[in-house]
Length: 226
Image (tube, rainbow, N blue to C red; front, top):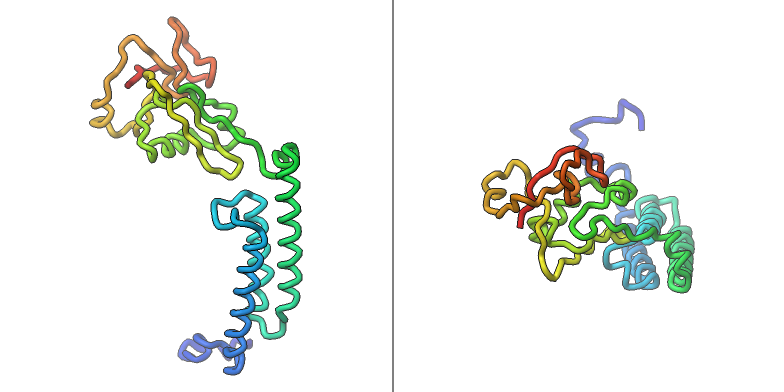
């Protein structure tokens, strides 16, 4: 389109573009076909596609969307290429799913491993760095589940899908508060353990006369709460 053809008062061009009216009827037909292709492909890829997706499933859905989206709006592109790409995506995804079901090694390679972010009330700093999860991100996940301190938690797993699995302790222990530092009023509602000192960053119990945390390298301590 030439620069001289662009006019702000050309409402018809802004709304409908240069598309001939007949193509709008074709868009309806194309839209129905594309919808059926998409629903069929998602059904063939399994029920998992309707829940939280793994990285492989997300890649499959993104590829499928890109493949079938072009024929929907481009008059000179047919539906058949999108159908072929959709079929390839379905075959690849079903193959990956089958291999993952029959081989734990392949599943770990393709899906990723489970990370233990918290163990017995203490943050696992190395695992958190590998999973690229910050301390505040993890604390936010705990607060969403009404967790007040790390002593309430036995394990926190980050699944290969990115979901968090939180397992509570049967008997709670004193632990590091996960409440925001600025919420002093709420912090004061928790009872403190005067003689139980923890690393203020990761929650590891601080030994007497210990100036550096062996788990995270922090130098500050705080009282455990319950």
